[in-house]
Length: 482
Image 1 (cartoon, rainbow, N blue to C red):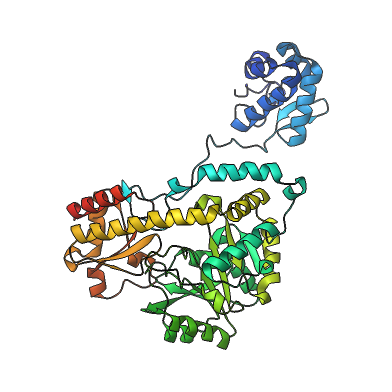
Image 2 (cartoon, one colour):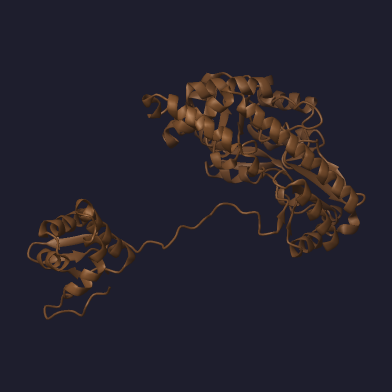
């Protein structure tokens, strides 16, 4: 519907009765008890969508009521309500007009969720098999929690998290990851991303302006710390972990690290390097930020315990269920040193007033009943098999290839013989074959390395989300393509 031409007084004439009738007829036909709300909703939608343009004069309440065969009071109430909300405007003796505050709404919401890149098969790392999510056990836990949860538990929670969940997590992390887990210094957070953002923000208020990050390492750390005003400094690795010389020369007092299973190289920090990092932190009055993103998944031996267990006052420890259950749950934990605890808790409180209470109670129930341990065992068996299948397929179809890093996690590093290079040509052929793969170089901060490194083909291959059959077929297709 559009405004009709201006009348003799220079103002638009009101929308004619027949047009208004057509626009609001469905609302007028609604049941009597809901007719007023329906009329308001129809008018509101017409203004939002632009069918009633700004500056359009509406029929008088008397005329519109007569045309719709509804009471005048119903129309008057609708006009008054939308005027109060800003959709309409009115003046004594001047009629009712469409205001100019509302803008046409978008026809649909866009989905900005990350995607794998469009390949028919994606070896993109970091993605668990979401089909392993324990729907039946989760639904049963949800029913139990809803039945037993007291009403007051649905109020604003402790910003650290529900005491029940913090207690359960402290026991779990102590048992499985060897951390020193005081429930009073444990926060329930929306994954490792929020844990990193909270730490970066608190460190910034304490004067920290730079933080060291592993090179190569997760590119997400750069963005998370930058959002808090903390610049990241790339620190190179050697065979044992972060190289000590560049670390001492950098002048940083905070370092983000993945010592149990370095991302993406797949190495585990040596005992000697772990001790040296703690010595460095003590010597500079600094802190290590331990991202234990997949520490539960070690396939050739028991997982190495968390670094935090050696010195909980120099290490902040974080992890989540993103690899074991699903990243969409946005559920993680953060253990902080005592000297940082109050500041981090206050920042969490002002950020979101606490993690959703129902989600926390559900996960606490899941952990207490042993369901989370059962889920970890299920994932470990599945991911171990898929890693073995990937290694065997590479040996068969890419003779001379080498898989490096420990047998752990959800990805592997594969170095292919030089005859398959240069790397950029290999990646282009893989893309043409509809197979998404990523090079190790994509996770580095440098300019690309020397000529030998550019000739080599070093891939970061995520396998956890692919069935064994798809892994074999994808590696065979990749070999044919290159």
